[in-house]
Image 1: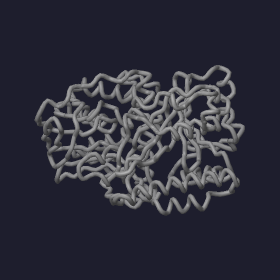
Image 2: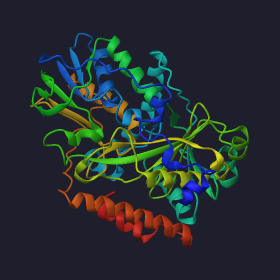
Image 3: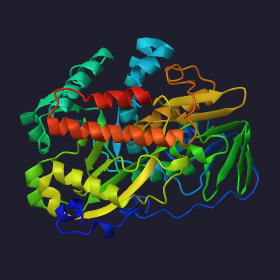
Image 4: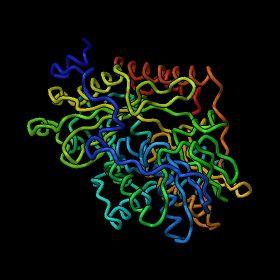
Length: 473
């Protein structure tokens, strides 16, 4: 029996519910399937993928032009992928390298993109309120903790880095250990960083709410329909073909399922465990009386939230990538991943060791070769796409959807001039190189984390610096 199982108060982690898409759906129930595509159809706009990117795009297109005939095609059900499985961080964290974006539109372009991300957090909250979507949204901000000297150095570097891109003193606030403990008591924490630009959300409630709204607006969502090929003005499926002047690929981590797209965005896996509700005695020891989101400065980083029903959901990387860009089996994750995440949860919050783990699951996110998100529409072919959010997509989907809508409608706006629009990224290496590369990257990061803890290094391990150079992060 592993240490993780022993520390779980005798709970057999191999027996807990694993998969089932996500706990978010277990707590609300899986939705009924909508009908599949009933044969060949014509439309003004065809959107492939009923996750948040596709649904937000449909929402803003319909708001701007109600007479548009919009068809959304989905293999499973709306919100089946990362949109209904993520950690619930409605954050302004930017997916990608600031210098990488700056090459396109310079420093000011990146500042504009960062500002747009912060505004998108409030936009999602405003739409949820206006459309009566109850998604447990609370904007209490985000706390990152540093638990050794190297992480503390990165915390200070991170705050200074944000300042170079226009962040104000209230956007990223340093927290001493005492100030951190007033918010959340994390074992061995030395310092923290707080930003107000983040809200907790129940992901399944949000994506199901948006899907219902766009349907009421007149958007047609066909589920149980597998798109096999996307070509100009054409989306071919196992149920028929949709012809439309504009076809938008909004598949994020599932992009590799489309013919010819296997090497465009790598499907990276991320896993989560969630506890049973915390007893009052445990809550008294860890604090966390607000709805702040929680992250850290490890290289193999974690992310967590305190749910509306007083559980802790904590996630991180398990097996980061499956050979050949394969994706998961309805959210089931590996046993050693469950044990590793449980051990991390107990290491950060010893008081939680006697609280059973209720469920585990995983999902995939899209990673471009340069780790930078992209929004694009080729006017000559009518083909568009958005994604590559690298795990920071819950807010980014909204900004991407609004940007795609403006591009489709030929609008020249501040959004269409942002530096992530129209970027071209080289493909990932063929197998087995990309499998070997990703496995090596995370092995190096885990090794670097261990060394930083065990040796209490004063700065980032050289091993992590080598991994960053190799991967281009």
